[in-house]
Image (cartoon, rainbow, N blue to C red):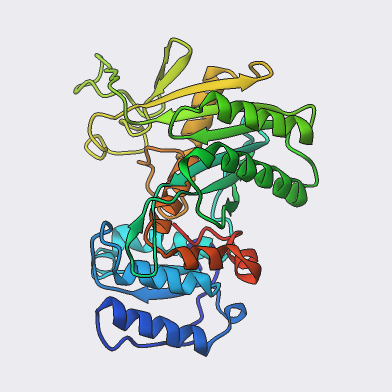
Length: 357
């Protein structure tokens, strides 16, 4: 922390967990939140056992939930993290610095034809108080500026039905644009919305109507970024056919881009295999204001801004990575906990910190 981010960590208080079960950690977390005020603590460091991310009732999820609803961002550590310091300590330092509300790094120049980028995600399940998964939808957006800096997240407090998704997307985008104006002093004109799936006509038309009411000069690009597709490209001049990181190809009115291929900044054998390309397709209103080349650059640039790691081998842009992290986390916390996180002083404190990464 001191060397890389020019800051120090000060331990304010410590709570010891008497066991390793989820119940033991819940007891320790409740003892902690009763002991201190969130204004006195920037981030909580938690040492937990290694557990599967697909099991809901684990110390990881229970600590995240209890601490978050009381206004405490948290960083989890396991024995695996501590046993490999060369590759993990800088990542942990970056995550800690970020969760205290600071910006570890951003892009060196503005993204072309971009004022605001909104990453949308929807979680199609949420737990009840007994940790039983229910298919009730909740949605959220992560908001980035023209330098790729994460600004805040907005979420829908109450779960909703599948047929209400387009209404909730409009609500979330509107809140994001209005909050951007409060933070920046102006309404954004060149608005980008990233989603992992294709936008329906109803979703696009509803958002356009809302944006026109807010700002007649608004331009919006609905950009679908899909990693689950059958398309592959190969470079016959490379030894194994891999397409280098940053290389892309036109594919009709869309783009296929390699974000994890061989890079000049990496050794030859340090990559994630033959890259699985991202398929980028964008519909723009009222007319095209950003080119396919600029979209490819935008997506590639946003892969460099994962503040939870210093690795350059990140496949997805942070608009999707951060939103998907929120979706995964909220599928494991309870409905009442999600509502608490969305209300009052806790929301004010937490929405400007990426506590979910």
